Every structure is written in C-alpha cells, then in structure tokens.
Amino acid sequence: MCIAVFMWQTHPKYPLILLHNRDEFYSRPTEPLAWWEGETILGGKDALGGGTWLGSTRDGRIAFLTNFREVEMLSNPKTRGDLPLRFLQGNKSPEEFAEQVVKEADEYNGFNLVLADICTSSMVYVFNRPNQDHLSLAQVVVTPGIHVLTNAALDAPWPKAERLRHNFKEFIDQYGESDFPIKEMVEKLMTNTVKDEECMLPGIHPPEREQPLSSIFVEAELSSSGHYGTRSSSALFVKSNKEVTFYEKYLEKKQWKDKMVTYKISER
Image (cartoon, helix red, strand yellow):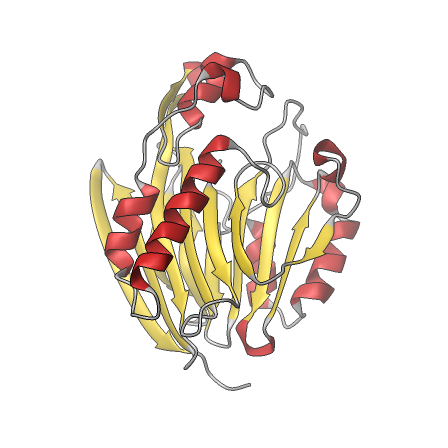
C-alpha cells in the first residue's frame, strides 16, 4: 500500500527530502533502482505492470505513488504504476499532467500521485477518490512544509502517518542545516514496526486485515494472497545545487540489498 514522508521547499539546503516505503506482495516481480528508458529515468520497476512507484529524471522531474485503500475495486483497471512513468517520460508541467490524469481517473483503482518539477519549484498532488476524504478537489498544489502520504488523502491523520511525521521532524531538527545521513535516516524512520490498536484503525477493511498493515514497515500474511510487506525503502534528496541522491534498500530473494545513485540535474 506504501507510505511516504517528504519536506518540500522548507529546508535551506534541500528543496526536497523524500522517504518512501513500497509495500507489495513478495511474489510480484520487481527490478531494483536503476537507470532505464535510455538512461533518462531513474527508479525501481514493477516488472509485471511495467511502471514505477517512485522515479526521477535527469532534468529534474520526480513522481511517486501510493494506493488508496478502498473496498470496491475495478474489474479491469489500468495499471497505476504507469502514471508516474508517463509524467517522467513526457514534458508536461506537473499542473498540466495532473489535469490530464483527472480526466481519466475513473480508469484506475484508487491512487495518490505526487508530481514535482525541481527546476520550476512546482509540486502537485492528484488523486481519484476525493469524496471519500471529504475533499472537493482532485488536484492540489502542494504547499511548502512536511507532508505524509499513506493510503488516504495527503496528510490524512492516520496514526502511522502521524508517527512518521513526528519522527521525521525530530530527525530534521536534530541535524538542522547539516547534511543528512541518508542510510541512517531510512533505517531509523522507515523500519518502524509499531502497529495500531484496533480502535485506531481506519475501519475500511476488517481489523484482522488492517492491523498488519498499520505499521510504517509492513510484514503480513494476507490470507490466501500470500506474503505481503515492505519490499523497498527509498530516499530521494535534492540539494539546492541541483545534486540528487537516490538511495534504495530492497528485498531480493529474501536478502536485503541496497544501491545509491547520485547525479546533477541538467539544464533544459
């Protein structure tokens, strides 16, 4: 289902600090962090659907995704991982691409999508289940500050979202204007396995299904569907000098591995 926390246009040294956990069935084929599409897109790849949950480009475009928790699912939906990929492959602004996505939103199961352009300092959040969280807009400009994205609307106060927000802010305050230790940040913030009490769960699914998913780092057995949990923890940091560091810790054949890529955003 995934969870992300990010700081946007607030830190003096980092225009963007992003941490992201991808939760998925262990059996779903996945390719780890790498350059693809002719060395223009950097990210992991869903080898089944062909899309991504988090990616960036050499010219400063970034997109990431979480699923929206819901009961009813479409019988033949488009793959949600295609949404970040299409933005990264194209040349539309975040606002223009979000407008396009809104028009075709009913072709997908529930999703949350964040689109950013570092070069224009623009970021947009778009999702296709606005009525469920009492929001009238499906497309919102993201304001500077700390935000958390779970499986409801942006900044929905789910308990695990509030735990992550609190811990993230503490870590940011601890280091101030110093460089952040990217691997330590992932380990300290994204491996938390604390679960919610039943009374704190969203109540969208039965508690026996929701409680295993209520931690930041997920390890679950979902009935006949099999092993499910956090398959990767990623960090994407952008410095004010346009240097990008993309780190991924990922599970491969029951072993945890990691990879880090650093590059400079190119001028358009």
